[in-house]
Amino acid sequence: MLPAMMRRFFLAAAACAMLGGCGFEPLYGERRDVNVVGELAGVRIAPIPDRGGQVLRNFLLDQIKPRGTGSGAYTLAVELREPQQEIGILRNDTATRIAYSAIATYTLADAGGRRLLAGQSSSNTTYQLSNSPFSSLASRFDSRDRALQEISVDIRNQLAAYFLDASRKRQ
Image (cartoon, rainbow, N blue to C red):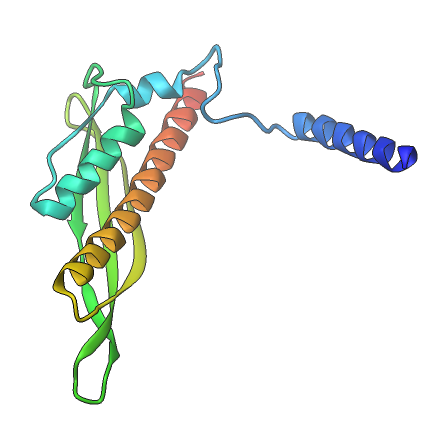
């Protein structure tokens, strides 16, 4: 039993040593050359129209600025589209399942309005319709929230990668 534990220990130690040598570095870790969390805190998120846009903006605020407002050195503008399609249909043409998609097109600009980064993020979910209007509405909102949460994480990761890459280019 002891040799198996020792083998696992040495394999884990070797994996850690190889990981350190491959150039791996944490995205949000403390570094001398860039503070990704600080750069993210400087992003002002422009209002996004409609209720889905408000929900996405709140998720983005939670992801990008968890400690509150920052300097506003950058502006993130997001356009959100939310197409839906009936995918489960009974013989009497009654929909039973809906496919919900959220597509966010975003642009990061500096304080002077110069576009620094543009991209798109999307997520797809489905929800079930039921005989209860409240249950159907709750399923719809939950589906929307899951998709928009996923998009907010993806946009945060794209911004963080941009700030890390931009800091390396400045050096």
